[in-house]
Image (cartoon, rainbow, N blue to C red; front, side):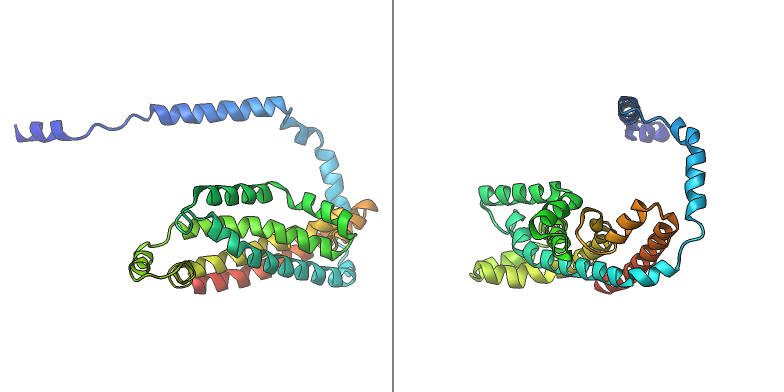
Length: 264
């Protein structure tokens, strides 16, 4: 009798029909998209001989090319460092303007978010091509492009972190009559600073990869040598550059990971 009563009070298992329907809809969307753009997997099989030929021409890599391209690799790291630094500086006011719990004015917050979305919409390669045409084919164009690209990443992640901070200290500061600058400096910044530094390091990692290909549009760095090697069909040099870039990225990723682990 008691068992029957307990069983009757158990909640019914939710239906998984909606979940399966969602999966089916996603599958249909992916399948139709593949048909529409003619993404045929058999193309890889039909062109496998070309792929094998390209791999054969890449091996062995021309390791001597690394010595020639080391100054350009250092330029790439400098571009990423300067671009990230400038982006970090300019993202600070943007991230506060985009946070709803910092500024209550809806039009100010929404306008700031629209401007930020515009920055995030423009690809870094397009930015580099635009500034290469304005500033000339030099690392400066790449630095400006990476700076704008960095603002989009750092400000976006940071204002979301600001909106998720503990409101207790903020309410206490309101109670004692703190002004807006004091409110931000002593209530918001201490809570969000570790996340902000982590996002800056993450952006620097991304910018190392991005700076490596900006030279394809004339923005300086190692990308110029990628473009040159591809133009002369020197695929052994291309492979050497890929491996060289991979080693640099791995080293920087490991250093950045250790720093983020200390902060968070």
